[in-house]
Image (cartoon, rainbow, N blue to C red; front, side):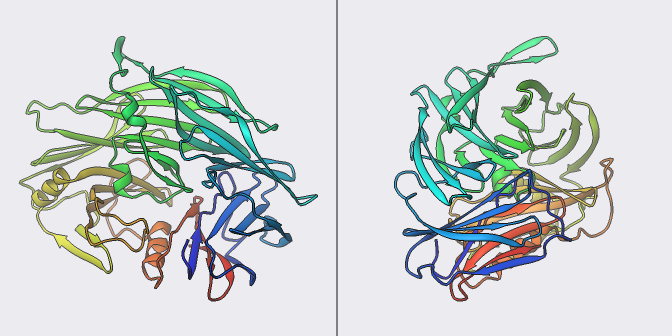
Length: 463
């Protein structure tokens, strides 16, 4: 946490907020220490649409309750005893006028529950009886309405689904085997590919939970960079549906789709394009809802194929080295650098774009706006990236184009209007302070929350 300006995650999964309901809200807190580090958590109630803001330094914890119209209902202060080995909150559970924050220890084996009761203004901390065995590893956590789910796996490619119950214990709901996918009657074993190395964990943040070195989490409501989508193994969340998507060498995209409500799983294999020249030697994809956007590329060609979950091609766009321009791109080929200043330049020749794609990690991103789709294709090199999203080193580079498609995946001409994520990014880049930002988005807006130390004020801003 920084001394001057703190920005925080607004975790509003499943909460519908419109521009008519909130433009901005703010409240003062003059008691927060200027010297101590601070954490802020946000807990929505998906049934009542009430919202709880928690502001805590190393000594005190302030609780603010707001209704769905952003009118303050109450606020009070408690002693903060949530510091120690369990400090990284990965989710919450709401039980009437009580709510629980869930935090793992550093090894992600054990969990602590911090329970609040709004009525009697009490706080209880306890360690959950459950802990992972040596053979099982944490993959991710998911928020579905007011409920909290855990996803884990073992060395035998078994997926475990657990849910936090009202007694604060993790109940095992279902096991799924992920070692075989059926492809037109052919059994393809993924056991050797789904190794423990894939589960190694490196980076934690409150927005996505615990991300593995080769396992990235994507939520459609959150802004996602090409450096994230360029990873070859990703987990997507769409309300109560999660998709585990794996790029399998030069063969296919494997998709395991799990419904956390019905506790069912579907498996799909979607092969990459094969051409007579064998020119495509790198592949990646982005799954948006139930549509897969697959890209295949080499130093002299690239193809974007849009497919349904059965592998049927809905549309495709191609690029070859000899072309003078990228006909389906709505933007120039942009090379951007982020550091103490922002650097932009254009590439004129498509062949240079292809070289850039192959030189770094190739990724694709999909954003829905006004019933159209914005497709970002490019590569990203974040080897020297700082931990502060808007205060990065000059060696963080990206090269990309953007494509605008209608709801039937047909190309639309014209300029692409800035998305809410773009507006948020510009807002962060223009800040004078080092900030760590976390956001929530619904289909219409992005919300940023931050505490400003000089003005001693917390603000929620809508973009």
